[in-house]
Structure formats: C-alpha cells, structure tokens
Amino acid sequence: MAAPDVPVLVQRAREGDARSVARLISLVEDASPLLREAMAALLPYGARASVIGVTGAPGVGKSTSTSALVSALRAQDKRIGVLAVDPSSPFSGGALLGDRVRMQDHALDPKVYIRSMASRGHLGGLSWSTPQALRVLEAAGCDVVLVETVGVGQSEVEVAGLADTTVVLLAPGMGDAIQAAKAGILEVGDVYVVNKADRDGADATVRELRHMLGLGERRAAHDWRPPIIKTVASRGEGLDELVEALEKHRGWLEETGELRRRRRRRAAEEIEAIAVTSLRRQMGDPRRGPALEELAERVVSAQLDPYAAADQLVEGLTATGTVPPG
Picture (cartoon, rainbow, N blue to C red):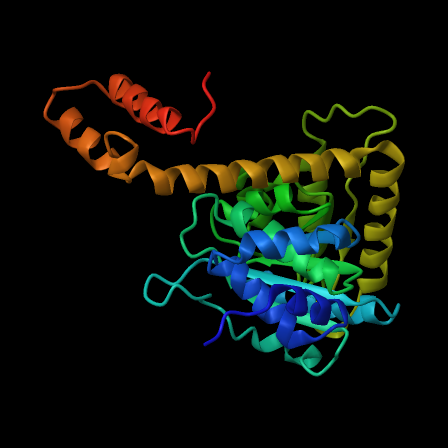
C-alpha cells in the first residue's frame, strides 16, 4: 500500500472525511514514521474540543452511558468523537472490545466518529497515543471528545490525566463506592454518576458515595465540588442533568484557569511518554554504547551493580547526542 499523503489526509479530515480520520489515528496506533509530520500538520487545529473521560468498573454501563451521552450532546447539534480505549489483545495487538455493539446507534451519523483504540504495549499506554488521537478528532471539528476506558486496573486513573472532565460511573449493588475508593478513582472524578438508578439500593449508593467523598474533605470556597447524578442510561433518564453538570464544570475550568493547567500537565506527560519510548528503543542499539541486554547480563553476573549499569547506559546515549548532559 502506498504511503499516505499527510497534508491531503489532514485536509480531508478537516472536511469531516471519516476514512481520513481513521487513517490518521492508525498512524498514531502504529507509531508510523509519518506520525511526526502528521502531528506538525495538525498543530494549528488543536485544543478546541472538550475532552470528557468516562470510567468505572466493568458492568456499570459505561458503553450504554457513553452512547446515551452522545445522543444528548447531538441534540445540541455538537460534533462528537468517541475514543474507546481498550487493553491490547496479547494475540493481535488490537482492541479487545473493538465491536462496541451498543454504540451502533450512532454508526450512520456523520457527526459522530467512534474509534476503538489499543495501547499496543507502548510505554506510557494511554498517555502515549490517546492525546495524539485527540488532536486528530479536534482537527476533524469535534466539539466534544469522549474517552471511554474499559475500566480495568490503572486505566481508570490514567484517563483522568487525559481528560478536561472525568466522569466516574458506579452502579447500585456492586460495592462500587468501596471499590472506587480502593482504586483511587474517588480522588480523580469531577462528576459522579450512579447509573442503573432504577435498581434497589441506588439511594444507598448515593449516600455512601457522598459520605466517602466528604471524608477528610478540605476544599476552598472556589474549589469544585463534584456532583452526584443518578441516571438510567438505557432509558436516557438523568442525561440532561449530566450534561448540565458537565457544562458547569467546563465553566469552572475556564474561570479558574484549571483548564489550562490540566492541558499543560497532559502535554508534559505526552512529551515524556514520547521521549521515554524513543529512548527505550535506542537503549538496545549497540552503536550507542553498551546495550541494555548486555548490561543486564553483567548485573546478573555480579560484574556491575545496577546503578553503575544505568550510568553506563545514560553515558552511551549522552555521548551520541541523544540525551542532553546533566
């Protein structure tokens, strides 16, 4: 297959061509040599969309909630992008849950772009690839980008670093509030949603969640106080209240300067992930001094301690001009 013409892809993505958007995101996922050119071409069109992270444990209804939220935002005539970030398949490297059956309601809407992504083992995972995919969707004119994680392990917390606003979903009868506290996601949520609120125990879950959020709370008068919204996403109930909460949080972010701070932190993490990935690739290059595997063997053989080995590795990279001294 011929290499894509990046300027043409970017122009077509700007015009809303879904195939061009898909090809640009594939450059991101595949760490293509053309990715650097693509990111430079996309630079003038970034930082426009509201980025909303959606996370929570499996079974709380994330895909259903995301689909319902897309419907509510489309009612405001907004162009929506959805990045469904799944753990990488150990066999294919693809997204394990790539079918996203419940999102098919929007498959034919030209103002909704849905993409399942896999981190494919890149160092940094979400932080490596997702911010660049966000730039593609912003360039394609998306007003809102929803980043939905599969809700397993560290991805629940990582999504908070990628989003302007993080929505944490829970459901009654699953012990979610306690599990959320253990996972650390009660510290990162901006809006909390108790989905499946027609089930027994929904009010108790709200009370438990409110209690946990209030433990040790020390907030200044101007600080954001995360609301708790009850929804039944499968019937579209509570979505207006959720959209209103998201709009209020966006206003608070802009008024306080927190939006700029969050995006600066996101950019710093992205730069670090790209740099570390590049360095890791170069660590195995024997032309740059002792390779990582060689040094590891010398540590195992008690010829070097790990600190001395690390010094040699860094010196080899520095000597070739890869890493600035100091």
